[in-house]
Length: 389
Image 1 (cartoon, one colour):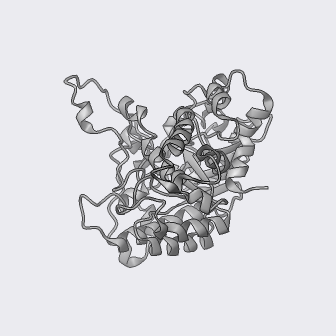
Image 2 (cartoon, rainbow, N blue to C red):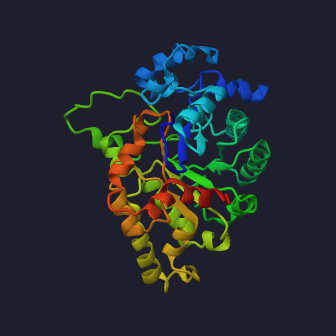
Image 3 (cartoon, helix red, strand yellow):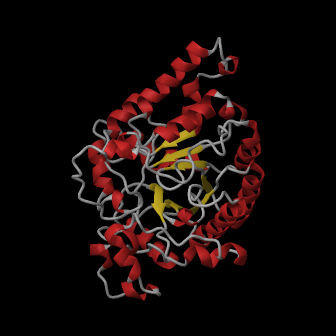
């Protein structure tokens, strides 16, 4: 019996758990020798599952999958790194569609600016290898939607890799949420990238984790704020993101800055068919943000004439952006305040952050919502974001 029943569920956040040689297998020979080893510093105790990961999918034959598959996370999960298993996992999950993001492979070529001289060849060679791998993982199951990686550092190279990844079958693109080489995402040099995405009816994604911040960092809170004289953190079990309470409070800030530039500088006006998903960054912040956008547009329009857009700033958000709340947030209140057209269901499978029963947690957090709003949350908004039907 599937985990999810009774309605259509479209999952806006799931992951591939890369094995140590996964990226190298898809890289061109001259890039393969430049790749950094897979960064497992955030994997915690789950490293043991990776080291003992079987080479074939046969290890699940003797396991009572129906009883255990929602409890096993990381590399131990069903379908963590094997595409045939992932199809079996989807059968058991009961999800209609699932976006599949990479987890750690970007660290092998992105985020090296402080350690190595900036190398566009490595950056975009690694990007091409990752996009080959993620598209291959999703190729044989139409329910799996490959999310490619797309750094904007070199606009012409970014457009080239975007077109190649579209040819490979990627249907969405994770773009780092920060200024690329000192330029806002609304800068005209990136217009060709936005135009190609619009023409292809393919959205871009902002996601927590490696690549969220320029240089590959993913911790928005300075370590200086952890120098509190207490040192009481007990550690991390391992997962997709090594975060703590302080990170959690400002996790959304890079995405908020990125999208504010895209809205206020008129990029969404110039590209009305461009769509965006904001994934695993929470949604509580969206309520004040859309109000603050309208206030900024109003009070600065005299000194910044480009703010005199045909629509209110918040209307571009409602037309073109979707967000995944954390199940620990008051999802019902968020939807009632900001509108039911903005938010998406996500499981984060098989990352530990998704928990053993995400549907139960979301249902408990959606008190007061009618069935139509729930239908939007679980299915319809995903289809709108992806340009499906």
